[in-house]
Length: 511
Image (cartoon, rainbow, N blue to C red; front, side, top):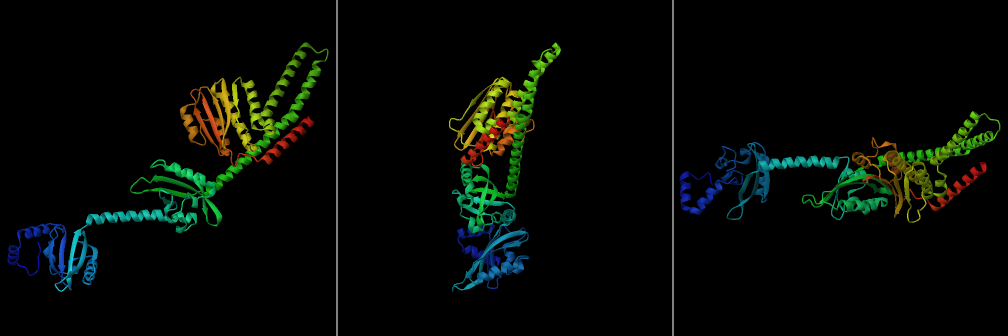
């Protein structure tokens, strides 16, 4: 109901009597609406009020008549007064006030008289307590989110459908040592180190194949002054999410970890080289010293055997000793070859494997078929050749010890810049649980020294190991990238083979 200080009940009834019935119904409807509407004079005293069904219990619109906002409100009165004064100056004002535990949003405008002069204000207010509480909660969550995003130690980034950076948090900018202008609007081609750009683009393509997919990429980011920094980047494809519409990623600096891994790998390579040198030394010692002593012993035993007048028992023991010496010489020759196969150093991996497979078939009784690559294999480093040779040794040894298989296959093939080595058998196979563990973990309890040794050698060559159930039997597959670490230069290859040939010639002359 519209109420003014000058209206008595009788005058109100007369006024209503003069109004059409539709206007009376409209006033009744407005009185029941949750919106409070009022007017004031130039001193901000309420001159009329109606509506306000949403006011706190016990409060009516006519309670405000003749009062200013300062007299009505216990708190937030100054904001209401300031809003009213802005309206008196001809400006629309909006503000929120707390009234008896409820929050109201008010809009106040100038009230013009017949001569178009401002004679007061007209305002409307609505109870927005629940919305205000929700907005406060959202604001708190927003502040918390901003604190995590802006102050967190990890970088956060949003990329659009074309791969351009839409947002990068301060921690990410600091981590990369870049400014916002250096990152926003840029793509991977601008930010990723050229050495890892191909991998980054493959990662991007794989990520976008499926909505909601999450993948992780490790690579180097270009930083100021021509440097590079290793990062681990985990991204989720939320391009199809209507509330996000971006690829959301987080990244962290793993340069220290990569440096430590590089040092460990270098130490591991040094240990392998030292091991190979020690194996080479022991093999040559066995060949040049122990084998020569055994050869002399066999000659002496043969000379004694030809002697006349030996007792029958001594002659029999002499024959047995000579046979035992020959067997020992054979085993020493085999051990010397397995420790450091001269064929590998002189002629390369393919001839060495062919020779080893022939000997393995004779010693084990297992029929092994060796399938060579169709094209000529490019020269490999000595470390790569020895690693491949040891993988074949360990793989065939496992076939002999565990598979109960009567046949096996060794296959070497080249696919572009990748070398594949497969060792297959048709034996009793492995438990599925162990197979899953072998393909998921770096070191597996229960897998034995052989398979873990194979895994370590594959890791040193930056390769990948897959152990599969062939039903029947087991297949071991290693994929070795040939560039840049496994390939040897032509000059280095020639020098290495020449040095090996000279060493063999010296050894034969000494023998």
